[in-house]
Every structure is written in C-alpha cells, then in structure tokens.
Length: 140
Image (cartoon, rainbow, N blue to C red; front, side):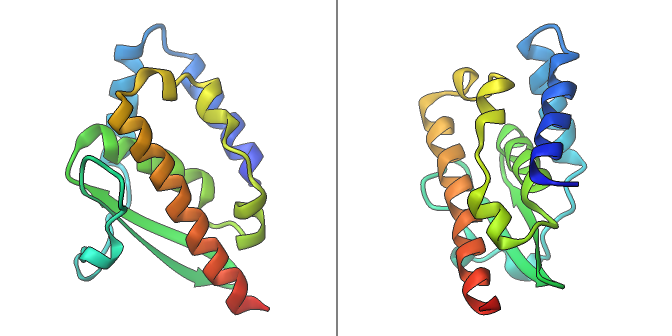
C-alpha cells in the first residue's frame, strides 16, 4: 500500500467512531498491537526528543524500504507512534520524505491533544523523516 492509501484507511477507521473517547480507546488498542522495539534499541540515542513521554524509535532498511519499530512508556503516546509507524513503515525513504501528514488533521488528532502531546507528535514525525533522509543518502 502507498502512504496515501494507508492514511485514507486510517481516516476511514477513525470516522467509524462517534466521539473522542472511542477514538482514544482505538489508539490505545493500536498501541497495544504495536510490534515492540527490541530492548537493545531502548537507548537514549533512540529516544525522540521533544516528547513529554519516553518514545523510542528504531529503523532498519530492508530492500530499499524502511521498517520502524517503537515503544513508549505512555499508552496514548504509544498509540500515536503506532499510527505513524503504520503509515511510514515498509515505505521508500523518498516517499516518506514527500508524504504529507494531513490525515492527522482529518482524523482530528492534533486538536484533541494537549499542547505537549501535539509537540511530541511533531517531534515523532520529524524523527521518522530524519531516518528517511539518512537512509535515502545511503541509497544514492
């Protein structure tokens, strides 16, 4: 699936819920299903700076596509990173860099986060794109 197709799928899923309590629960469930990062990658080098909670992200390049793993010590934050990883994992670095994140506004996520969590969301996206820059450079 393309990044846009995954984003549209997420928009459709979130539109099924009546209120934000249900959407938060869905995000928590997504976080619980997140493939866990290997414990050896839970280091200070892999912590996303700018998040209120601890969020660890690791990326590997496999056949010209990036695969991300992550974890967080907070359930909502873990759900947020799970959504982002679903969008950006198994994608080419170039596609990650060119992707917009309008789907976040379409599902209403940013407006339902505290300012510190919204800043964390921006930091997560930035970090995933930094991995894409690093791997794109390796592919050249």
